[in-house]
Length: 344
Length: 280
Picture 1: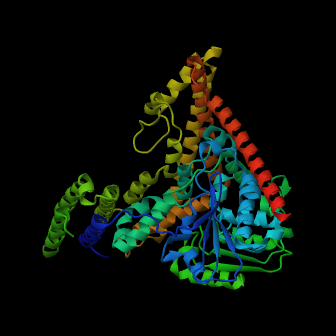
Picture 2 (picture 1 turned 120 degrees about the vertical axis):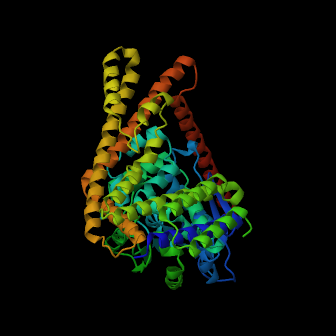
Picture 3 (picture 1 turned 30 degrees about the horizontal axis):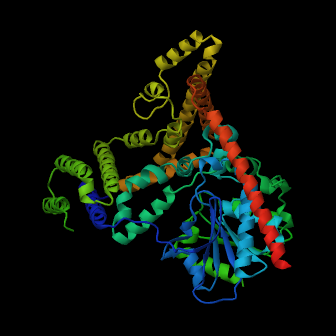
C-alpha cells in the first residue's frame, strides 16, 4: 500500500492540475446545434435539424422527458446522438418541452400527449411533406411515445423507445419504490409544481454516496485537463438544469404510471382513453442501458410482454447507465447503427 | 500557468518531493493553509470558476482529512470504524436534507428546528416538550390553524426520526458488508470506494423492502402537510391584513388555465378551418 505521504502528494498534484485548469478555462456552456424552430405552443418548441446531405429518409421525431433538458442528446460535438444521426442522412425533429411556469401547474398528461405531442407530429408531417413519421422516445418521453403510437397509430411508422420505464414493480427500481407511498396529490397542493431542484435531489438520492459526497470528493479528477473539464462542466450544467414538473402532470404520472403500474396492467388513461399497448402494430426497437440505476433494464424489458401483436419487436442492450447508454462514445456507434438499420 | 499563488503551491509540492522526510503533521498543517488560501482567493485564481475552486478546495481538504484519519487509525492498529463514523455523519439524512429545506418554515421556527448538533434534524426532547405544552394552551377556535401547524410539525418530527432510524439500519448493514470485504492490502482510496459501494448497495437493497419506502414517503407526506398547514396559517394572517392569500392566487392560476385552454381550443378550430379552406 502507498504511504500516506505518497497519497497526500498524489492529491496535491491532482489539486494543482485542477486549479491550473480552472484558472485558464473560459465559461463553459453546452455546445449544441441551434435547430430551426418550426412550432411553438405555450412553453413547448419543436426544433428541426437538417441532415448533412439531402435524403429520402422518413423524418424522425424525438420526444424527450419532461424532466431534464433534451440538449443531453447534443451536449457537445463529440458527444452527440443528434449529430451522429444527422451524419447518416436522418432528418431530425426534437421536442423541447421548455420550462413550465407556476401558472402551468394544471397542464396534465393529456395536454402533453394529445395536444402538444400530437401537434408536433402534425407539424413534422407538414414540414417534411410525409404522411407519417418515426418516433423516438427517451425515458419518460418513451412512455409518452408508446401512448401516442397507440392513440394515433396512423401517424407513426416505426417506434423506438430508449431507456424507457415500463414495468414499475420490478426489483431494484429505487425511483419507483421511493414514489410508491408518497401522497403526491398533497405534495402538489403544497408545492404547486414539483421543483427541478427537488427532482435533482430525488435523482441524486438514488445513489446517495456515489452521486453525492463521493462525486464531490473526486472533483479534482474530473478537472485534470481542459477538455475533460469542459465535458464535465457541460454535464454538470445539464444535470442542474432541471425544469419544474407541472403539478397535474406530476400527480398523473406518479399515480397512474408509477403507483398503479398503469402501462403493465392497462389502467393508464390519457384524455379519457385507455392505453392498451397490445394494440400497437408498429415495429418497435427497445433500447436500454445494462447498468441503468434510474430505469433498471428489467423495467424497460417489460414492454416485450405487452406488445404481442406488433409487426416486430427488437431489444438492444447497451453497456452503460441511463445517460451513458446513449452519449458515451463506447455505445453511441452501436445505437446509431441499430437505429439506422431499424428505420430503413 | 501564470497565477503566482498556483506557482508558489507547485514549488511547495516540488520542495516536498526533495524532502521525503518532512513530517506528516507539518505537511498536513501546511496543506491546510494552502487550502484556506485557495478558498479565500478563489475568484482571483479562476475568475470564471471561483465557486468551483471553493468547492474543489473544500472537498480536497475534506478528503485529505478523511485519509489522514484513516491512516492515524491504522497506525495505532484501530479498526476502520472511525472512518465509517465520519462518513456516516457526512451522509446522515443526506437524502432528506434538501427536502427539509423545501419546507420554507417561518424564521421563528428555524432556530427551533435547526439548532441540533451535526446534521440531526430531529427536535430535542426539550423542544418537543415545549411544543406539546403549547398545544395544551391552544384551545380557542381562533388559534385552531396554529394548533394544526404544531401538530403537523410533531408528525413531521416523528417521520424524520423514523427515516433516520431506517438510514441507521442501512449504515449498519453497509458496515457489516464493508468489514467483510475491507482488507489491509487496499489503499485508502480503494477503502473509500469500497465504502461508497457498500453503502449505496445497502441503501438500494433496503428500498426493496417496505420499511424504508414507508419511512421515506412518511417524511415527504408529513412535510407536505406541514407546508399546507403553514400556508393555511399565512392565509389567515393575509385575510386579516387584507393581502391576497395563497388560496386566492391558486384560484387566479386556475382561471388563467381555463383562459389558456379556451384560447388553445380556438387556435385548433382556426387551424382546422384553414386546413379545410386550403383543401377546397
